[in-house]
Image (cartoon, rainbow, N blue to C red; front, side, top):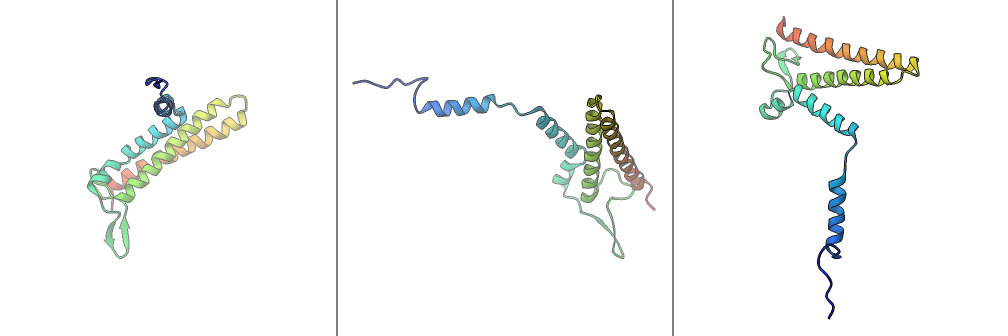
Length: 142
């Protein structure tokens, strides 16, 4: 009687081994890794962990159909809407820096480079000014 050899060329192990080798050899694109790192950083810097564990209010009602997106005079507390707004502003700032980076790569087309750099710097400055103004409003609420 002939026996089938059990080992490297076994018919049952071969598809599993091939699938394992494909999964082990997979390398995601660098742009995907960079986007994931930026997204996680924005989530952490915007207070996502605080939002998950502390479950803050969405907005702060102050009467007469008025709401505040932040807690006045307190930097150590936040509301959900303010946190999401800051995350969006951080995303715009990051997008602005990425546009400036891509603008420096188009040296052969100066018009395209100037547009990308101008839009990128504008996005970054707008997001920076808005985050600073939110901090100012929190500290000097009237």
